Amino acid sequence: LTRLTVECLARIGEHTRSDLMLAVSELVTNADRYSHGPYMLELEGNAERISVTVYDSSTAMPVLYAPDPSRLGGHGMEIVVALCDRLTAERVPVGKRIRAEFQLST
Image (cartoon, rainbow, N blue to C red; front, side):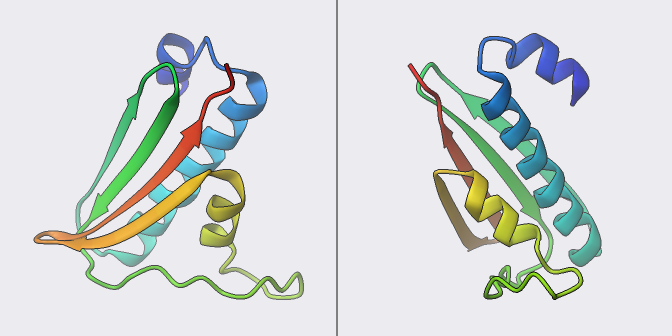
């Protein structure tokens, strides 16, 4: 991810870059922790938006808990929802696809 940041994300603002990196970390951590199988990260972007997509082998959809600062763990999707502009999750033939979209400031 560090190399990707330097090469592909150098033109976006530091705040958006930090949000994007944290969302990638949370989505990949969830895929690794809960899918018990292979997963794939896909990054796409243009001048207006960047999409982070994670495919994993589990058909279980992500759980969005109500915010609770006293809860230990289970904040990953809550964090992603707070950081991105749009989040979608859907089942696909190999498991599921989670996509977080980030609008870029112009």
